[in-house]
Length: 214
Image (cartoon, rainbow, N blue to C red; front, top):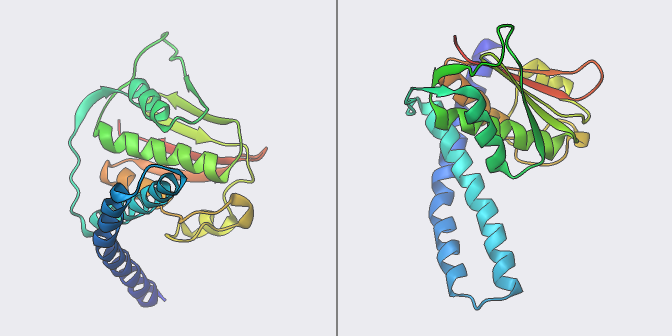
């Protein structure tokens, strides 16, 4: 069984890399073609679809680099609450951010991490919560821990058991999508030496807990 799972993982990674590189050139061609269209509803529609496709290709390329171990974090000492708040704001999604107060009073938790990759994790978790969960979506910063919670149907049991699978969203009630957001978040978390835990709240809703190293 272990050998079978290992072969399946290698095949999945190879497929991801091949698809990403094969799609990059035609997507570039579509973007160039869209620039030649006269302004109007058709151009707007085509540009929107091409942007979606380009985002998918960029996600696949990112996963391919993470699979290949080609990514290296650039660490810096950053205020965690500020980085998280900025990442949430950039999503443009209605999300409440709460910073827990330390026992010694209001403090700013400073962590050593790659802020760009941390922002990528947070934005993916928030986007996933809005896309597949339900409002309200809440983000809590407590020490070196960031919790993203929605109030939807929660993560499907097979995702909690086996982890996220690319191109697979799990349960119908969690909505549609290509299932890459959580895969990217987990890959980036591992690169940062952080732990990303997925669970469901007792009263409903999906909970993603990111614990950065002290």
